[in-house]
Length: 368
Ligand SMILES: *Cc1c(COP(=O)(O)O)cnc(C)c1O
Image 1 (cartoon, rainbow, N blue to C red):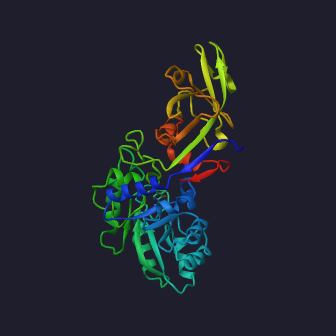
Image 2: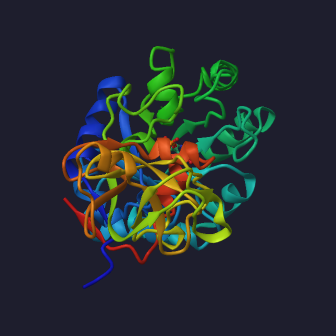
Image 3: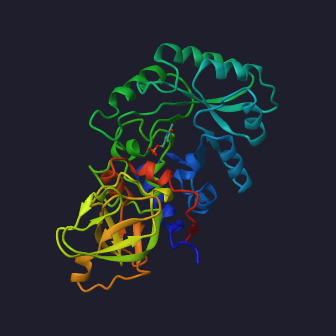
């Protein structure tokens, strides 16, 4: 028998989350962001759930190839554009739309031989200071692109650094507006946090929105709001089983480093899930885990292949966990109870994005 750990990708949850985001920005078209192998879910596994999107946004050319092999004929956007000149040949062959964020990419385009002009998204650096033309270079970049026979339509985009936090998006929206108001073309500004939190602000929906995490059921601004607040459902559940039970007396310790000492008699469950499966080693004692759909605390250190939970309260409440009992590390239990990946991530000092993307290749994944 294989190790009992397994991840599940919920097609219905992806469909639900997509329609939830559409409802938040009814006039915008939706790029489903499926970079990083669909935030760890697997592009092939989320395709059915997200094929109702208007387009897919990726980083890697191989991810674009995979979408075309799945039969997707609609728009695909490369969020970082070409990394070298020959990438443009793939863009021509697969009809990819691509971001242009620096002069070198315009140079490559100007030397590219193509029958069909490309659709490009010109990126403004409105304050994030990662990719994009600075406000002083943006308009001349637009003029350069506009003069190229290799370029068809020019769309305009920018990316917000603080859509999930108090600083907000207004300073960047203003910058974008000032530089682009009189330019033609479609606009794309918002990630999940911007479109959920700032949907009422002008420009935010624009022509295209670019949600990622919310499609997968993560709240972009946890713990200020949780996924239920936004009406989102978990698209991934990570489940395993108990493979050992230990009975502790007061003073006994658990796991590497003996970081947990039992204050009294305790029953400990050993779960077949560790950091080599993608569960964060940084999750401390007290991080919630579902056993039989009930919350129990993780105790002691997470090791490579196992983690330990305190079952004592569960036993006191009439449950009878034993070898083989179902455990949910995040997502939905078979019985329907829910533990948000945001909560686990927060306890571990990180964000849901990181945990979802880090699901280990050794974990078998099923689509349901
Ligand atoms: C990753 C990414 C997104 C999606 O962000 P979420 O916070 O996951 O919604 C949108 N736009 C760009 C440019 C990105 O790189």
